[in-house]
Length: 71
Image 1 (spheres, helix red, strand yellow):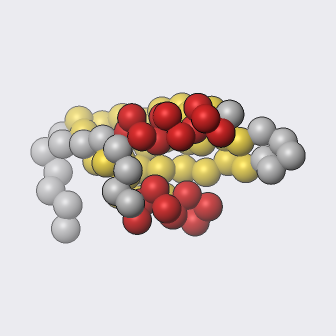
Image 2 (image 1 turned 90 degrees about the horizontal axis):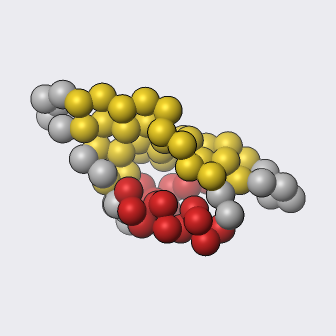
Image 3 (image 1 turned 135 degrees about the horizontal axis):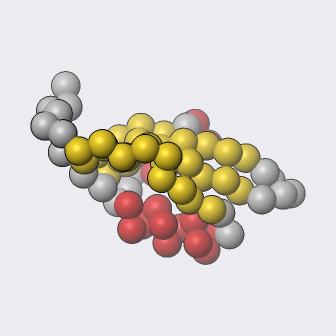
């Protein structure tokens, strides 16, 4: 299992900063403004493509590899 914490930054005029948590490249937690990514169980590549189209910047804040099991 790989857990990734990512940050998305949108530029002005609709500026925001929001976070996502991905487990094995699937969105499992998201800030309210990005709830559609969690609801749709978006993949890491889909998030990256969407952010690129919107002009948003994505960065990985933290990545942890381990043997977690989601409850």
